[in-house]
Length: 157
Image 1 (cartoon, rainbow, N blue to C red):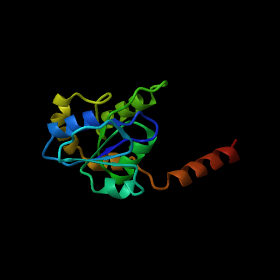
Image 2: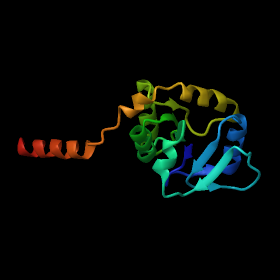
Image 3: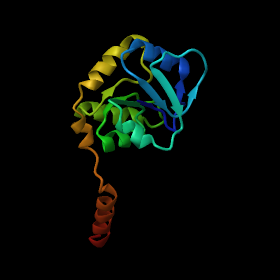
Image 4: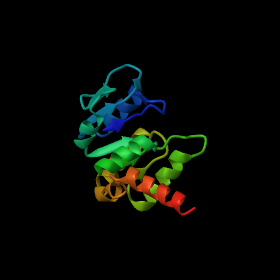
């Protein structure tokens, strides 16, 4: 499953089609904006914007996406094997976050969209990840914990 969010440039149909052809034994479902037109292999399914992102990601073996907060949080919340393709940002937040995920063994990282020749190895490496590592980064009570921490700091200031 490839997810493009609102913060980036979106996907290129030509690049997605080439990647899907490079890994023909796996279905490629793509959510979010995709530009371009042309032929696509039978294993490539471009869905665009959908209301049920979480349900679709739940069925994925691997989540492919940028290093933005939304996609990383989605991978962690669902405990999905994650191939992180961080995009360049002014302050480097995606590349820093991706590097941290790689150090933890929570994601396979490749800077930007990979060349066709490396897709099979990237998918294989992603499938070998232990999804409990990234899943362990998710705290369903994070908002309550953060609020309690702030309240405690204010009371003890």
